[in-house]
Length: 295
Image (cartoon, rainbow, N blue to C red; front, side):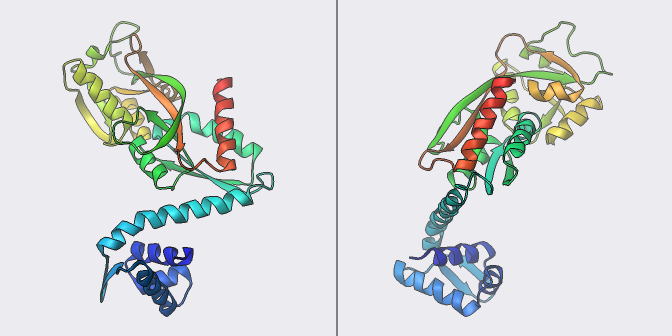
């Protein structure tokens, strides 16, 4: 089994067409087909159902695809690790982070890292922690800043806690404050019009779970937005929203903290347990820790 054969197989599986896959890989279509056939002979199973205009994976192909992608990702990581030995003058880091941290913590960290290692290409995957964990396990990311705990059934990852961040309520400065007190309880959200994030946001799940634990269902005026949209809707007076303290501090909105530490989240950095991150990613981890130490 050759890496080239796995790359050909993964490309055909992605585009579902032999000719387009050959064009993508800049190889002759007969050569690509021969390599796929050789791989099938070695494995003793067909990988594709071949019908004119309809290429689909067999059960054997479905089983091989995630493994092939993992092998190719690991090979790419090994290649970049060797290339980066030359004092990190070139390379790439693939970092995942939730939208709330991309709007607060991550920009300052990346600015410091880029100033130190200008030749390193930075790739950012913005998404919910569940999606980022899946991408880490598949080898598509080197590091991810996630919200923990991961929950039952999470893949084998190494996580290191970075900080505990308070969640707060933001509201429009032109609207009445959500409560007359300096701080509020989760119970005070009962009946308040709320702006809610789209499904898949960690903040959405945490807020809804806290409201249900307090014995009520939250009331949404608008739901389904990303971070910038949610802040904009709050600014327009459409309702209040629960957001991280670091985001609230930059929003220009009225900030009302919660009583106690019931509304708090844990931020951690994670990587695959079976594959340590490459050197450029480890350096980014170090810059992140330095930044948090100075904050």
